[in-house]
Amino acid sequence: MEHISFVVDENLEGLRLDKAITESAGPLISRSFLQKIIKEEAVTVNGQVKKSSYKLVYGDEVDFTIPDAKEYQITAENIPLDILYEDDDVIVVNKPKGMVVHPANGHYEGTLVNALLYHCKDSLSGINGILRPGIVHRIDMDTTGSVIACKNDKAHVCIAEQLKEHSIKRLYRAICHGVIKEDEGVIDEPIGRSPKDRKKMAVNPDGKNAVTHYKVLKRFSDYTYIECRLETGRTHQIRVHMAHIGHPLLGDEVYGPAKVTYKTRGQCLHAYLLGFIHPVSGEYIETIAPIPEYMSELLDKLP
Image (cartoon, rainbow, N blue to C red; front, side, top):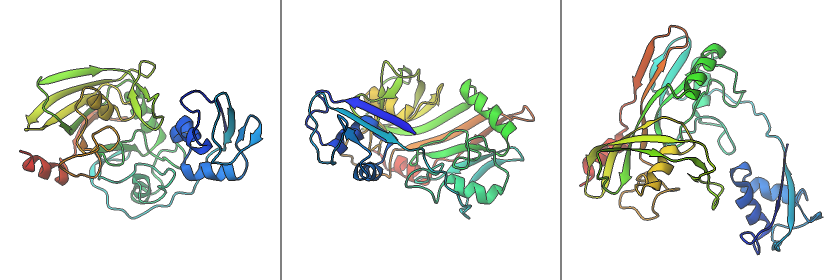
């Protein structure tokens, strides 16, 4: 269980209780779950139970507790997988757009984990628990491309260590707004929670070290096709860094402009190449996920 307490400042003064908690707790709590705990009188203001509509006053102290997440039994589902590499220890999959990597609130079916459980049977590492068996890293729901999963704990520890040391080679392809003038560049800016919106990430001096290398593959009249190499793996790293330098990814509904000429389902971002040292053989393995059809068609269409 996690206890959260905050004092209302000028930014939260006058807001409804539920709105203020959402802004303060961010992704820790869903709107529906928030309404539930308020209705059950689990939220207090200055020690007294209040309704969702209560308007906060400067100096109010809000207290509530987020219960531990329930462990769900995740079912195996016969979902086709685009397998880029597989052996007895690891599997690399080309994840399609719209698929969530592992189960979470609102997504307990149709995830990559559901598909892996069916394909791999009992051969997935258990280090990350029943919600994320085999999962060492993740990419966003609308990001396509390479994801590696581990079939045993030894492989999991080895791949996780490579990720921690930033020795895994990861190249992404993306389409961003605007025309980037320089042929290549490095964005070395720390990333953390946005102080203005706790649901978003942002370049934040109090955040964690984040380094993205990018190079131009092709320029269009209003867009640029780029390749990005990650030194680090922060949440939304490429999306945040490119937006920070004024070139948000096309289709990015969180960090990009509201109005766009070309409609896509989420950001145009693809995990193109993944290179790692095999946890057992010590051999260097490199996989390439072909550019998805939606992106190649868009590249042919852009003027």
